[in-house]
Image (cartoon, rainbow, N blue to C red; front, side, top):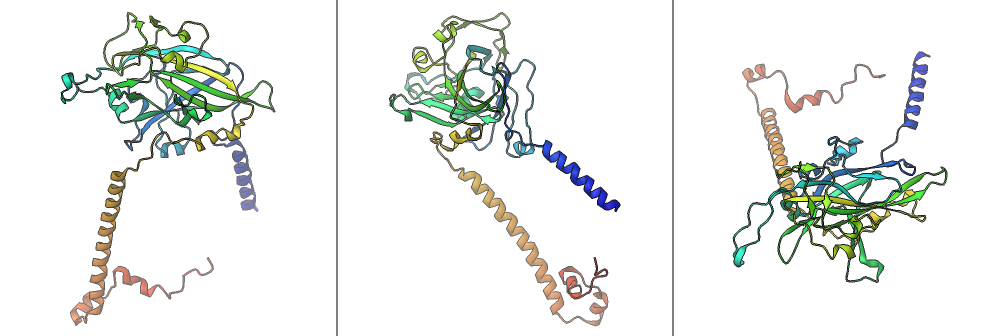
Length: 371
């Protein structure tokens, strides 16, 4: 009777815990107007390199209070995710225009060959090396990964001119100059849907990022250091502001960026961002992952043959070692039991050993058959 009562208690406690448990990202989260919406950063990935790279390994802007780990479950650890906090501040249904994150020093940049010589450039900084290895950022909002949005100029009147893929590139390499440029401005576009069962509550159903490279010319603050990896979160005064940076409540778009220079991945760089909210009444929370199933594969699929070959070689070597050990033991035991032992050998080898020990246990009845 006591055992039955104990089992019943365990079942009731398990049922209560099951009702309180949910996987992050599976249960919907509702926001009110003006609520803080946290933007988290994940490890950077590349189509050229199979190894992820920690986001803050590069001199990107850091939160004022320091970087905080944001992993929420064991699956994120097993998947190689390195989710951390970010300095980007977002509020529900509050648009932001050319918000400044910080200015940071990316270090020494590239120098193109002079006079058409094939001499190698000077040593590159970490950002340039990462751009040339085609790494891209992976951001998260409400456990929804960012889908990069790129507008193709060749088809301006067609709906197919907008392409999406997961993450967004850190920068790009100009084909004409062969120099690297960093995407230091992003348009964070968020879509929301009104919750029908709750008053004045909204849920995020879309998260896209449109990156731009904009060379902000700004007045340095007195505490701004020239050393690599140094940064300041103080607001700088932009001397060549675009219309979106002049307080006119205009969001940055491609037409504005065409008239400014791109930002080289070197020296002091000012990072800015826009936040654009829009309501999507046709997209429900359960369907917000559909955009990832219809991506245009802008990043070409590359198979890492070297990693596959290394894994196969390791498996073959281990299999050969185990097989050699087993065959050697088997041959030794077979030779021992097949030979005719002398009286002295029989006296010494009264006890059996090895895999042959199981032959006496096959038909032996168990000591406690009712268990």
